[in-house]
Length: 195
Image (cartoon, rainbow, N blue to C red; front, top):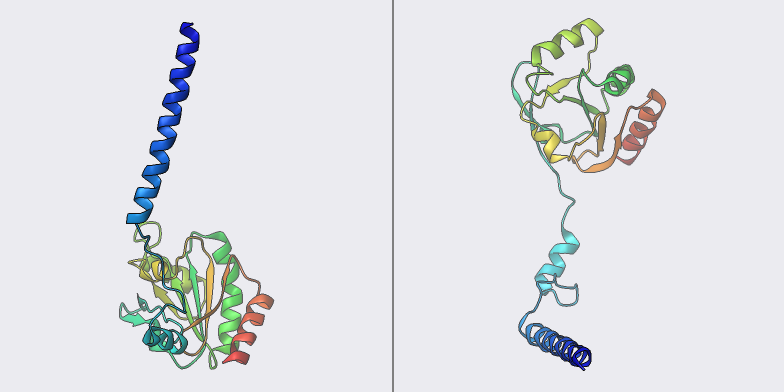
């Protein structure tokens, strides 16, 4: 008999809990409206026209040139831009630098190259990078991202990473990993063709 009473009590308790949950859900549902984005049909006319005419975003950044002067990405608007994020301690980065040197010498009149060094100040220093470039004989333009502003703006989490932009500094393509000269040439040719 005691066992039966326990069973009936548990069933009643469970039923009461379920009833409370259902009524609680209904009560809260009626009073809560989630913040959902407006659909195109619900958006005011001004917002609809803004979204149709808005230009792709340009994500500017500031890096330092070899003389310590600040340089903005947007200073180079007018020609397609190739931005490469790299460091001297990165083996894959070093392996692709000859390809960038070759492409820079071939396309420097048509494309702006920004070789952005991830300069942390300890493992990678401005003086160390300058010595590395001089020893290797590289002539492409190098910029120092000492505050990691450019890396943050473009979400760089792995290097090497190359970002290809049109003449308005709008991103057209990106590549993570070391690039061979033939692949780099292909990206650049498409960039020039689409400019």
